Image (cartoon, rainbow, N blue to C red; front, top):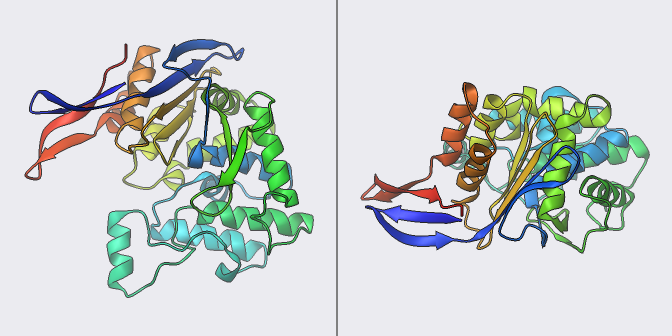
Length: 313
C-alpha cells in the first residue's frame, strides 16, 4: 500500500487495506482485504458520540465536536471539556481516562514547562469521557462505573456501533488506550458508518456531522491533518485513530476507511488521500486537505530527503 522512499530508494513498505462503500452500502472499491475486523480506535468516537446524543447528551457545536475528538490538548480544548463537566455538575476528578500530557507539541511543552503533571483533562480523549459522564447524569446512570462494558452507557454504545457498521455484533470488545471499551468491526462496516453519518439530513446523525464539519479545530487541533481535512472537504466527516486507522464519510453517502497493517502512524493519512484521489475527490480547498494528509516527509539530518508515498495496485 505504501512505500517509504529515501533519496529515491524504497527503504520500507507498509501493507494494509482500504475500502470505499457507496450510498447503498455496496463496496465500490476494495484494495487488500477490507472484510476482516479491526479496532477502529479513535475513529469510533463519532459513533460513540451518536449513541450519547441519542440518549440525551444535550450538547452541540464545539462541545459536541470535542466528544468526537482526539484533541491536541490546546487551551480551548480543555475549556470545552471542562464546560461539559460543569454543565453536568461534575469536575475533572470524575474523569477516568488515562492521565497524559497534551498531544500537541507546543501545548505539551508549555504544560510541562509550567510544572503540570499528566492529567486526565489534558489527555486527548477527555472530551469523549466528559460527554460519557454527562450522558450518565442525564439518564441517572452510575458515573463511577461508566467505563465498564456492561454499564448501560456502554451497552447503548455497543448497539449503536453494531447498527451503523452493518448490524452484526462486534466480534471483540477490548479496552482502548483511554480506558473505555473499543469494538472490533469490519473495515467495510467502518466506511459504511461514516458514509451514513455524512449523508444524514436530520436527527442525531446530522447533529454529530454538523458539529464535526463546522468545528474542525475541536476534532483535532490547529496543527492536525484531520482538522485540515474537515475544513477542506465540504461537509465531510473524518476521524483518525491509533494503530493507523482513518475513516471519512462524504455528503453523497460514500464512506472510506483505511488500515495500515503494522499500525505505523505515518501511513494512514497518505493512504486515505490516495483513495480519495482515486475516487475523484479534489479541487479547490479539497486539494489543500489532500496535501495535508500526504505531508509525511522522510528526514535526513533534519531535512526532507524523501517521503511516504502511496503505492496502490
